[in-house]
Image (cartoon, rainbow, N blue to C red; front, side, top):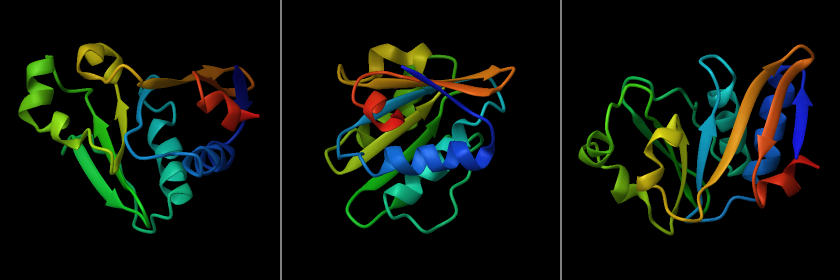
Length: 143
């Protein structure tokens, strides 16, 4: 299923809607070009989880954690990593716990590290806005 959003506000609202359905142990790979809106979507998901602190891109620190009411959101950015070993070295695997929701930008290149139930959300530029495509349970959040 896919949906087109026409603004950052709509993208963030969609993220908030998805965030309301997140559960511990979930891993979501976020695909999209630079500037597509992956972090904006994560900001909305964080709001849906009840996180009030400012969510920023982990481009340089690689992993940010935010504590919500019931769960911790772990936001990873693998853009600068060159191998799965680097992801392991920065402690990625330690975040795959039942208490965490893990969102991984640029994670498609590291599929072997992702749990079998990991889902993907893709954000693509479209002449009408941004096209959002999702797998599995995330599809229900788009309707």
